[in-house]
Amino acid sequence: MLEARLTRDLAALAPEWDELADRTRAMPFVRPGWCEAWWSAFGAGQLELLTVREDGRLCGVLPLERNRGSVRSPTNWESPDFAFLADGPEPRRELARGLLAHAGRSASIQFLAADGDDLQACRAAAGERRFRTLERTLERSPYLVLEGDFETYFRSRGKNLVDSVRRRRRRLAEEGVVEFEVVDGRERREELLREGYALEGSGWKQDTAIDARDDARRFYDAVTAWAADRGILRLAFLRLDGRAVAFQLALEEHGVFYYYKAGYDPAYHRFSPGKLLIGSLLERAFEQGLERVELLGADEPWKLEWMDAVRERRLFQAYSPSAAGLAAWAAEAWGRPAARRLRVRRALQLVRR
Image 1 (cartoon, rainbow, N blue to C red):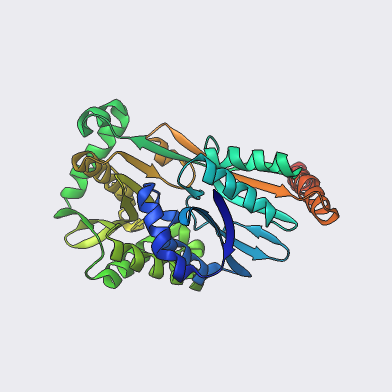
Image 2: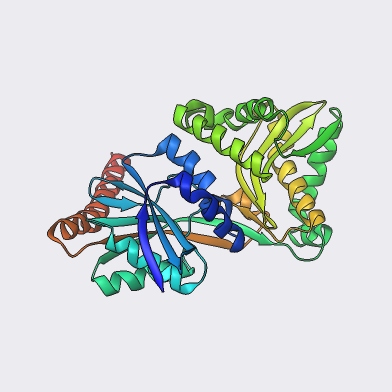
């Protein structure tokens, strides 16, 4: 028999939580180490952990942030993905029911897969409890299932990309010794991160860079330390005569490479070092026998050069049938579109002047 409960003791639950994640081959972003790092940097209100057990064995976990009478997923734009951690359909449905049973005025879950079972379970639970719902797409993230060999895949992407990569690689090699490096961060992690953060924050990204925000820096320092201890951190560099000119921070677990943060030295823009680095990383993924590469975040044009399939991630919001819930639903359902229309109207007025 399934039993759903709330707890607030992350440390006590963590060993079982990690075991469940291993058993279900879950992505890193739903593990306790990730949640703890995120909460320490960005959390507000109270962290609650909705658990589901069957005969005492943990079979479902959903972390929640409770604040101002509502609950939400502990996620923000530093969160590339989110999901219910459940060992089967029944625990997943019980998590969805528990989410709304403990929602208060409303519940909001970000970055759920649009075609996934979690979203279906949330919709069904909302119907059972007569919650009003809203949904919208947050991101469409490119991904690639690895089949065959790299050269066949690379040529299939078209002559323009192949010629561009090979020409820039040749020209960069004329400048000095080019090296491609991927390390797990167990040694010299802080030193390597300083190099990487400097590249990630270069050029147009300065205002949103990791180093520009104290909370973001705390989060990335903590989450990379956790990932390095687990052996899933990947710090990738493209170097010219030893100097880093492009960088990627990634995670790799259960045969999946998760591209996360990246940057390059704008002084080498003409060589497209970021493009060269991702090409080398994809070649490595094929050679390592990985199953999939996930280019997290939005479907930017440079990502679509490399892969066509996208994973749509959605925001799910549910509002209780109480007076407070209905008022919150009306404000979100009607207020957000009205504000958007007002912004468009003002923009058009400026254009016409």
